[in-house]
Image 1 (cartoon, rainbow, N blue to C red):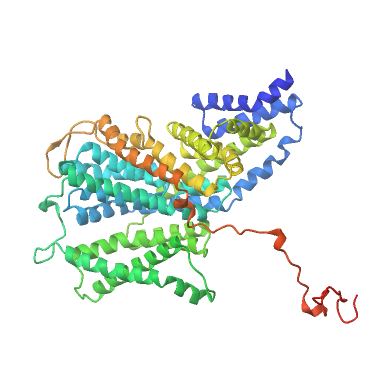
Image 2 (image 1 turned 30 degrees about the vertical axis):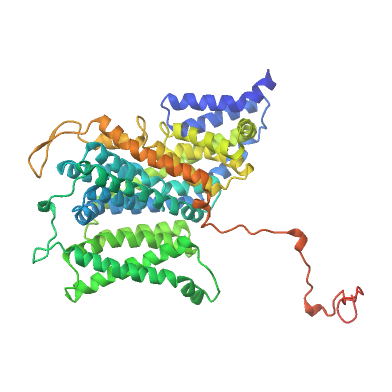
Length: 567
């Protein structure tokens, strides 16, 4: 009986945890209660040593002393300050004015601003709710398809899962035992490829279904020059000028980096891109500032507006990523710099007041405490789970899967996709990832590739009807019944739940295509990572310094003493 119970303890632990979670018990306490309960049962039955929990306080203090996790409150504070200081409204208004005159322009603005919000807030709920409150009424006002408007908002909001610097990637790196900087490097190209696919989809709709994504009418365009022109020509010329300088800097960056460091080096592609973009945004900002300061009149109103609204948050993001990619700062230090930069930006725009600061600090403390408690609970659970050889049970479970690496990845992605309907990312990261990572490593799967794929998978799960979290977030702020538009004064039809579901489907298909690309071509993630140093023990040679005198071998096989007179 005891032997049978001993071999079944891992399965019973998972069953008990599932019962706790389905009963609505808080996840952190469900994990801790399951771990403690089965630990004490094992001790009482003589299956586990009495000293099992003696090392537990050290494990908990180890979590609290983890410097990497400090990045979570810093990046959260950065995003909340930028969001609450009106950045989302300003960005959407400005980018909407730039792209509004073309068909699909508002949807493009939503996707690009959503990507920028994702990079700053790092939280899906904040991104979707902000974009839903700000952009949905405008898109409905000017005749956008309700499904496409809803799909663009929810899809751009879920980018918070995968666009660096993302909270998801920080937690994933910690649980996989890998560098946060490497996760950022690995996710950089896939995230921007996904944004590009969204943009191409909207452009395709504008070409083949123009009535679904109409252009802004002339009366809705706010920024005009004194002569009545739009000022777009000035924006185009200025953009080309800055782009040429950015590309030129990127071309010569390897020489510049080698000259500064004094060592010949070839920087990784992502480092070159991020540093070049940082320099380009700084050139644009200071150029526009000088034009305004000295009243040169070289730039139009829309050009100045775009520069002063879009460039500061972009510069902040690129500076944070650039310092991490260059190795100048750790992710924690980069997050601290980002939080200070966000506070300074809000102060310079005269939007930093006590209510904003109080709300941002309270929300940051709430989210950080939530993450920390789940991590402590998962540590208690895994402590007992490993003691009862649960990791061996998990390994044997996946050993039976056909297909090797591909079979394992397909099964894990399907499992995580389904769990993403019911569990938040943090629960999945702290419960499942520590159990799956050792199995993936034994199958010779690159853990950076594995982590980026899981982040992209959860992003897809959060968008898939009928259970996707992002769809519920939009439903909570989208008007379900007809409402009176405050600008036009006309009654506008509300957004049905089926509209939200239908709008998400094409974006889910795009994300599934991106996931397939990642599965088939892991180089999309791994190409920018540092190559592991290969070590051949057979090539080792022992060289004795010359200060010891003559060598042991004179080339003819005759050994000599060390020094002039031997030992």
